[in-house]
Structures are given as structure tokens and as C-alpha cells.
Image (cartoon, rainbow, N blue to C red; front, side, top):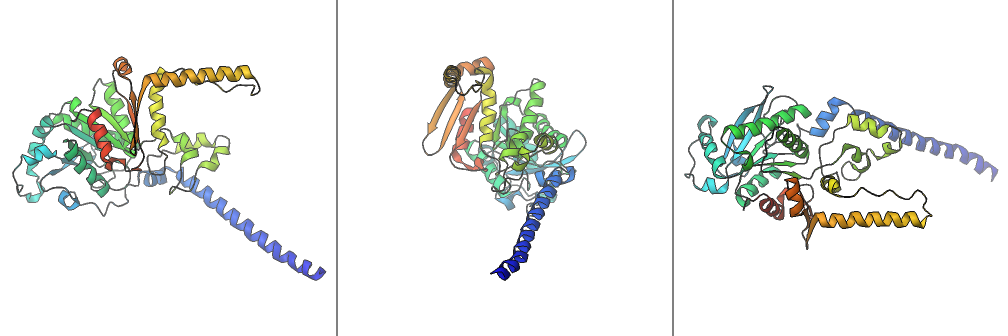
Amino acid sequence: MSELKVGSRPASRRLYRRALAVLVALASLYALVVVLVMTPFIQTHVLYAHHIDSWLYNKFDHPENYGLAPGKTVNLKLRSSDNTTIGAWFVFSDPFYRQLSYPPPPNRNFSFPRRELIPTAVKQNPTILFLHGNTGTRAHPLRTVLYTAFTARLKANVFVIDYRGFGDSEGHPTVHGVSKDARAAWDYLMSQGAKPEDVLILGHSLGTAIAGLLSAELGREGIHPRGTVLMSPFSSVRKLIDQYYLFGCLPLLKPLSVIPLAPRLITWSLVHHDDKDIPASHASVLFEAFLEPHLPSHPSLPENPLSHREWDNYTTQDTLRTNKRKAVVSTTHIDGYALYEELQPDVVAKEGRKVALLRTERGGHDIGRVEGVHDAIGRMFKFY
């Protein structure tokens, strides 16, 4: 018995050392990933992911290769204010396209003769300025199906750009750079005769941040577009410390939340602009931010959890806030589809703007493919 115990000690020590080595290796790997995430060069390539899939969807002179009708799309080159050239597509609305001759004129040397019809198209139908998310290009199939839906169901033109570093656009993506690209797209539409009230800015995922920046810039200049739509947005980088899951299952940054100053350090360093791994609750947070000026402040939890008086006071304040929210927001539940919330008409009249939140039960990150979403956009922004 004694010999067995003695012999088992080296084996248990080896097992302990191996387990310790595995833990150290995992901790080192995790630390390396976090350091890489905080490196600007890595951030740019991971977060924008602008080189992924680019080689699969790069025949921009052949929009028909990606499911768009012959002669319905014009390939363009724009120039941003810092002289960066970016690629773009203008897709005619279905009503306008049906008026054109068929088959379309020959596209010799990729001159796209129908580009001369863009000024007429933007005056005849509203236009959606589409700002896509990270990864891939404007020719990605998950995006071309949206152009088809918007041009058919909303009867709108679609103007989509590839930010610098994406597709056939020059340069490398930066926050200031992609903002300039979005403004270049807006300015192009204005140069073609479009009116601000006829252009809807629509951002998806990464594009929601860019759409917000563009809308804010226009607002400061007293320019009012038809509206701004944020599909699959995020609310705060800091909240991603707790809520970001790599590949939908790995809480990459959550362990940092227990380290003093780590959340602030990551907030300073990390700019995350996408994706399906971010909870849909971020859209609700944004909507609640619009409501906050109209509601009583959040009551604080009782300092003394055993005090009935403090709990009664907390409950009273919380009930007041809940009732006020019901008076400010109109809520509609569509069975099997979504919950739709919007500001009441009297609040809209005071603010001068309409704000709404659509939370669908299905659709995931690519919510733009859901027909009910098209209907909500069409009704809210009076496309039909």
C-alpha cells in the first residue's frame, strides 16, 4: 500500500503540471488576443474585415453577374473630399426601370450610357443611400437581395458605396475616412438633382455608425434627409465588454470587466462596428436614449434594503416612469412577427421628428431581408 502511494505522487504531480501548463497557455493566448485587438493595425483588418470576400465579388462592371437586371445598375466612381476614389452603384427603381427600353443599350468599354438618366431617376422616385456593414463589397449577395427588395417593394432607387479599402475603392478604412465617403455619396446625389427630403439614409451594422455620423453632420448644417434607418445597430462599445461574443459563443472581453480600468482601456482602444455577435438589445438601448428626455429619471435602489419606506418610494417612482413611458410611446404587437414602438403624435409634434423601434422575432443580423421590415420603412417614411 505504501509503495502504491509513493508511486502515485509523481503521476499526480505530472497531471497537475500538465493542467497548469494548459491553463497558462490558454491565459497567454487570451492575453495575446486582447493585445492584438488593441493594436490599431489589427483593429482595422479585424473590425472592418474589408479584405474578406473581396476577391469573390469584384466584377463591379458586371452587376448582372450578381442577380441584378440588365441595364438596371450603373457602376460609378466618386471622389471624397480628401481626393480618395471610391466605387459605387446606382440601382434604378423598378417603376423607372420599366420605362426604359429593353434590351438595354450596349455597355461598350463599360461606359454605362444610362448614367445620364440618374438625374431623371432621382427626381421621379425617392432614393435610399445604403451604407453596408463590414466584410465584402457592394456586390455581396446578402446586399444585392436588399437592392432588389428596396427597388421593387419601396419603389426607390438605391445608391450604395464601398468605403475606402473595400472593393475597388482606394485607401484604407478609418472612422474619419469612411465618414468622408458617406458624405461624398450624399453630395453626389445632391449634384444629380435629388432633394434632401427624397433621400433616406439607411445603415446596416457597421453602416449604422456611419449613417449616424452622416445624419449628425447634415443636421448641424440644417439639412434634413427623409430619415435615417439603423438596421442591427450597436449602442456602446463599453457595453460590449459584457455583451460581445466571438463567433456567437465565446465571451472574449467579459473577463476584463472585473479588472480595474480595463473597460475604460478597451473603450479607448476598441471600436467594434458589427455584427451578428452583438445582442439585439443594443437597438432597444438606442431607442430608450431618445425617450429619456420625456421620462422621469430612473429611481435609485434603496440604500437600506430593509426599509419598507424606501422600497415604497422606489416602487412609486418606478411606476410613475412606467406609466409615463406608456403615455409617450405607442406600442403595437404583431403576432408572430414583431413588436413595434413609436413616439406618440403629440411628442413627435413637439420634437419635430419621429422615432420608432421595430424588434422582429426572426431575421437575425440580416434583418433587411424580412418583408415586414420593408413595410415598416415604407409606412414610416411614406414610400407608399
